[in-house]
Image 1 (cartoon, rainbow, N blue to C red):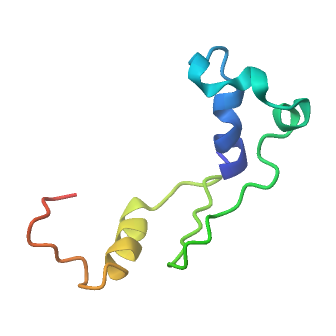
Image 2: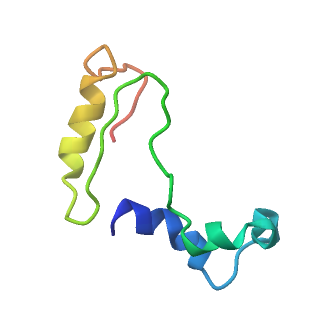
Length: 80
């Protein structure tokens, strides 16, 4: 599923918890909930994954491990 559709899926759900205050959302936001969604600018590495095709989870995990700074070898971590 494309990331934009995945992000909007909760807004299309038939029923959501009232704590989401959907009744306060503008009509424009309800019509196009993914407009303006982009990665947070936190200054770190960013991996964009195309969810419209099958995801190679091992490749994503290897990318994450390679950016942990120690090669992903955390002695306190269990198997993934």
